Amino acid sequence: MARVLVIGGGIGGLAAGIALRRAGWDVAVSERAAELREVGAGITLWTNAVKVLRRLGVGPAVEAVSHPITRSEVRNWRGRLVTAIDFGRLNDRLGAPTVGVHRADLQATLADALGREHLHLGRECVGYDQDAGGVTARFADGSTERGDVLVGADGLRSAVRRQMLGDDPPRYAGYTAWRGVGVIDRPELPVGLTLLAMGRGSQVGTLPIGKGWTYWFATANVPAGGDGPGDHRADLLKRFGDWLPAVPAVIEATPAEAIIRNDIVDRPPVRRWTDGRVALLGDAAHPTTPNMGQGACQAIESAAVLARHLTGAADLPAALTAYAESRFARTAMITNRSWTYGKVFALESGWACWLRDRLSGLLGPLAVRDTEKLIGAEV
Ligand SMILES: Cc1cc2nc3c(=O)[nH]c(=O)nc-3n(C[C@H](O)[C@H](O)[C@H](O)COP(=O)(O)OP(=O)(O)OC[C@H]3O[C@@H](n4cnc5c(N)ncnc54)[C@H](O)[C@@H]3O)c2cc1C
Image (cartoon, rainbow, N blue to C red; front, side, top):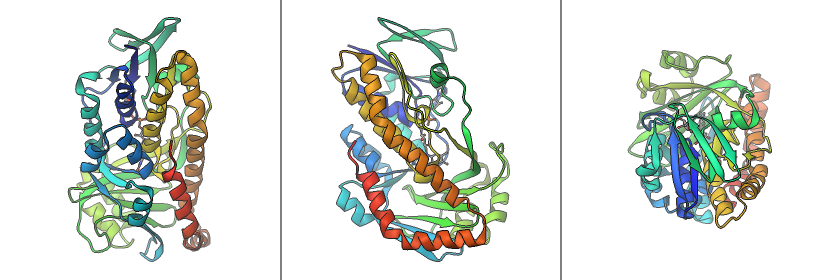
C-alpha cells in the first residue's frame, strides 16, 4: 500500500489524513504538539466545507458537535441593522448548512475519524529528503520516516514550506484579533444568529457554536507584536464598552484568562506548492486573513482535491502538481479578497465608515449571491 506522510495535525492535516485513508493510502500524520489542543475559540465551517466533510464520511460527526447558522446580520457599532442574510433558506437551497463549531470539538472529531493510531504526537518535522524511490521526513528527535508522498500541512510557519520556498515572513495585515468563547443569553443574539458589527477601525463578530456557547472575535488597528497572555478583557471593554450591548456582554461573559490575541497575517498567493513528491496544504500553502472565514474551509477542500488527484496516480509528482494547479485560482481569490475586506473593515475615518455601511446595505443582495456562489461551488 502506498504511504503518505502528513506533517501537521491541524484541521488541514487531519482532513488530508481522512481523505487519503478513504482513498486507500497508508497514512501517518505527525504533529509537533505533545497533545491535541486547539485554541479556545470557535470557527465557521461554511457549506462548502460541510459538503466536503460529508463526502469524506465525517459530516454527521462534525455536525453533531456544531450549531447550524440560520441568520446572519451585519450591524453598525451602535446596533443599527445594515444588512442580513437568511441562512435557513440558503442552507436549504445549497443542501448543506453553514455551522459554528468549537475548534477543540472539530479537531477531536477529525482525529477520531482519522483513527488515533495514525496520529503521532510530539513529532516535529525539521525537513525532508527525496529520491526516485520515495521521500524521507526528518524529525527533531533524530528519527526519520519513509513514504511515497509527503504533505506539508504544518501551518503558516511551515517547516516544509520553508525548505521548499525559503524563509519569507508572513505579512502583517495591520490589525490584531482577540477571540474568546462565553456562555451568554441575550435577546440580540437569538439561537442560530451570527452577528458582525462594524465600527471605526474595528469589527466584532459572534457565532453560536453549540452547548450554549457563543464564540466571538474583535479586531483593532494596532502595531504587531502583542500576542500572548495579558489582561485583554479590560483593554477590550475599554475599546468596545460603548458598542451595542451584546458586544461588551460577550466579552464580559468570557473569563479574562481565556481571551486570546493574534496578529492577523497572511502571505500573498504563490503558485508553487510542490517539490517532487512533496506538496503543501492548508495554511502552509494558501494562508489567508480570516475576513471571509474560509482558511480552514479551504484546507478541507484542498484535502479532498489532493486525495482525488492521488487516487490511482502512476506519476505521483505530476499528480501533486495537478492538485496545486487546480487549487490555485480559488484559494488565491479568497486570500486576495479577504485581504481587501480586511482593509474595508479597518477603515477609520468617519465618512469612509459611513459610506462603507451605506454601500454594505445597498449591495446586500449582491453579497448574498456572491456568498452563495462561493460556498455553493463544488470542488
Ligand atoms: C482569528 C482567526 C479566525 C479564523 N476564523 C476562521 C473561520 O471562521 N473559518 C475558517 O475556515 N477559518 C478560519 N480561520 C483560519 C483557520 O484557523 C486556518 O486556516 C486553519 O486553522 C489552517 O489549518 P492548517 O491545518 O492548515 O494549519 P494549523 O491549524 O496551523 O495546523 C498546523 C499544525 O501543524 C503543527 N505543526 C507546525 N509545525 C510543525 C512541524 N514542524 N512538525 C509537525 N507539526 C507541526 C501545528 O502544531 C499545528 O497543529 C481563522 C483564523 C484566525 C487567525
